[in-house]
Amino acid sequence: MTVDPTAGPEPVAPPPADDGVPAREATAVEHVTENVTLDALPGHDLDQHELRRLVAAVARRPELWQRHVAFSDDERHYVSLHRDAHVDLWVLCWTPLNDTGWHDHDISSGAVAVVRGTLVEHNLAVGKPSVATAVDAGKVFGFGPEHIHRLTGKEPGSVSIHAYSPPLWRMGQYAVTGNGVLKRVSLSYADELRPLDDAEASAAG
Image: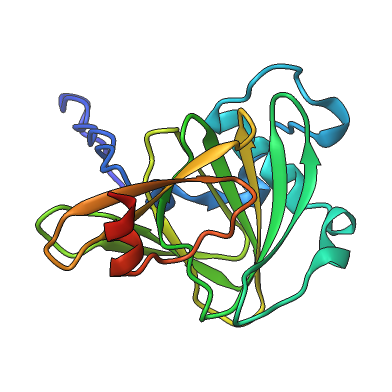
């Protein structure tokens, strides 16, 4: 290779724009090297970057979650692994029939690490089809409290680790009525997320 000493520096491509789809920015769990662990939590509310480190650390320790793994097509199986004043942590199990429906996490930031199989994160778009992004085992992504999404299982036997801070208390469940009106239903963190039908959405308003 010959280098021209008179040539200027090569142009540097600008970083990709934030398109509001966190799953597209998913990184490998093995590349998340700064741990936030259950044994040494920071003692304050965690931002999405700290939550990514936490779920990545838990994903690497199957002894913390493996015994809770179970699957059902009728009801999504999930178990709380930890909850304190600043963060809650869950293991969620998925089949291709499991679907959270559109939802937000109220004031909480969150992070997801897929440890088995594949999930699909769907992002609601106005005036165009929703955006679907597959997230494979070994990937982790985070999001802020402004995020609205829908998660579905793509492969049988998929498992993921989720963390939220501050801990989930209320969430918003969304549905579009038959005449195209978007409705939000407030529900407890203990309620199972699922798609709302038109009657439920209409009753919410």
